[in-house]
Image (cartoon, rainbow, N blue to C red; front, side):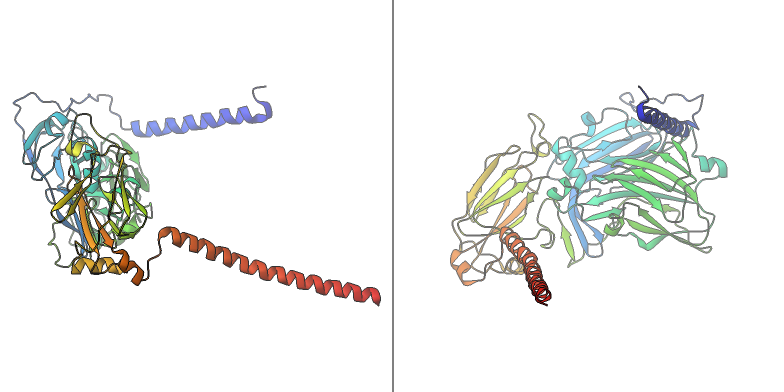
Length: 533
């Protein structure tokens, strides 16, 4: 009865195979387990302990260049995205000094610290400085990121406040170093990360770009140089915050890979390493010969958005001995090709003006308004709905996902109540032709919505809790709407597309029906003719 039709036997066999694979995987990770392994201490150190390494972390908003003419206006660490690479050794006593140079709260979460960090550096008020001292007790590759608490952890990290900390092993060596008896010729610190144009894109995991070390295709035009026979070690970290990476070098099979960068978490060979957000690896290999070796993630919608580079080997190469994961510090171009602001108004092709009438909805999500730019006729009601969820009880500022809407109307200010998750507030724009739109902004809006004229009004608004969240509304007088061809709304466009699609489907059906009718008529005539014959 148990093995009826062989299904029970097949299930049992499948279970044994799965257990065998799992056992083999565990043994692969345990293959270098040391019988004399001693459990390291935590990162706790008694008060008054003196550090032997010290690093200063500064948190503030600024503009950074992430591509040729591409500017990101965002929160940063030490003025770059990613922030500085911190390298220490196992057993070091490390002091981190966290300085908030911004107008809003920030903080720091350091994944290499095995102790409670939030009481020390978890929420740093504007203008304040905090510090923590810890024992770097576990070797590995770790992420650090902004962590003011609550909602701010997610949106500040998304915006670009992250970096890498590497704790190099002292007790156990990496396997290839042990075999070759020497340190690497090239060490590459590599962060994969995502750039988002809005909070809505962040929540739905739709990045504009996916980068290595802060710049679009950074090592494609400026390859990492090596020589045949070089011993290369890569410290790889995917900070996300959303996408999974399968990191790979074309033409390379890893000699060894170490999960989370710990020298005892060893895998022999391999083509890729799989890394979710905050996952890390150390991979080691030897450069086999002259030639280019593409650096990619094998999730192919990511390299086409910028996560691609080259390691180029030649016998006379000027070897790149160290590659830093910190983003570049480059001068801001006078006329950027594109400006990206995750929370406020970026270039119009990123934050495109959207036309609506009657009742129009703006979602508040990921600490940004969506859409950020709106064009409406006079008399339209705009409804703002808060979709953000996370709020710490009794907290405020960056720790909460509560928002409001503050509209500037000349000397007058219209302010909504504070909106919790799912709550909404509406305002009807009954006036136009009072607060005229300016020349440059007029042209920007006209390029996307032709009914906008010099008689249209421009209203800007923000969130008083998170003042970096901004939006704009252009109100067009009804009298002007009658003189200018109106744009097609999304609903109308969908209806027209459906109708034209239906017509395009109906037309061949009618033709086919006529052909069938004619053929039937001809067949009938032939049958009658034969009978008469």
